Image 1 (cartoon, rainbow, N blue to C red):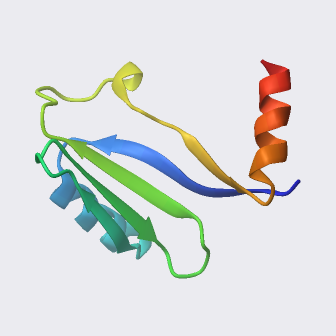
Image 2: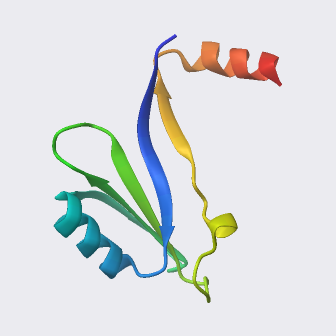
Length: 94
């Protein structure tokens, strides 16, 4: 079974400011965007052009204060060549 890390997620309070920062600071550009039909969130995936690893920025409409460390929805995402085997292994691990 081969796992491949595909993205990391960060929640952001100001999507436009964050997109500008990652473009100017790291030359990252938008490759995909998901807009919730109800406007409650926007997810933007960024790449640097030299690897397939992505940075996912998530903006939540209803977040009404600056993020604190415990609020951030940080996660690691992996792609696997054998989903069924991976699922079985993780179920066995509890």
